[in-house]
Length: 219
Image (tube, rainbow, N blue to C red):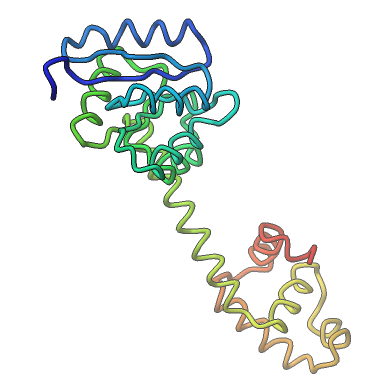
């Protein structure tokens, strides 16, 4: 750290929010707010001009979003640390921020001392996610893993098995499926058993839900 401390840019499209953040952060003696930005393009321009150590970045802003700015900063290799600041704790927002290269993610309703701690943490090279965000990140990752597993199981089905799956979900009997596809009821039953085994679903209701979730009945 230089004698003048470390440098921070605050980015939010609301002036009153920026003023509040500045007031909180300027209580940290070794920290200097060098600029404020109201939109994504301004963040990038000011970062180039001031070479900050940390950018406190709102997720939703006019022009380039905070997520897009975080990705741009990462891709340019600027080395600036990014702390995302948001009113959203939705798992998808948090996952997108991590993918974009954010070093931390905190919520706007946090206590002032947590914001100061978060900025210090990312400046020092550590990651910082508030407790509620950490939980949502866990939820998001779990959902993402489950979706990958479902997609993998879907990919394991043959074209014929998918045809049988959709027709079962639509309420067709083995005999009507056999007549429609020109195969025997016994073969339909074999396909049906394989589908259930591959998808790990044992009920028609579960198969129907799977078909709807993956829009298979619209293909």
